[in-house]
Length: 106
Image 1 (tube, rainbow, N blue to C red):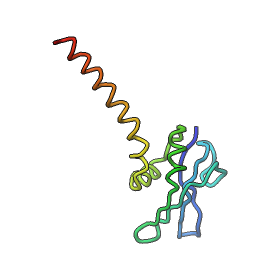
Image 2 (tube, one colour; image 1 turned 60 degrees about the vertical axis):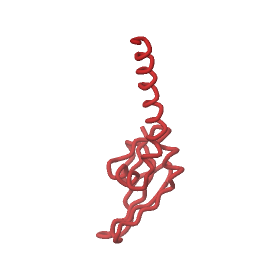
Image 3 (cartoon, helix red, strand yellow; image 1 turned 180 degrees about the horizontal axis):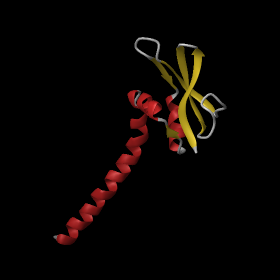
């Protein structure tokens, strides 16, 4: 299983993170498949850079984001882009089922 998660870089007491796509069983700072962004919590406000197209690519392939990365992706609007096509399809199906049910009752 693939995970999109944070990999720590930086000095002791001054953390910075890479947002990476890695195997779930790989160590936190171990090997990864792709580096898709950075997160620097030491700046005010925290600095975040994301390659949105690559994040969308991996999420659509089934990669699961860790909780901190979900919050980062949500702030940048990436999760809304992933959910919007699926949400519109699932909303369309029940509406069609209700219309069919409404027609049979009439």
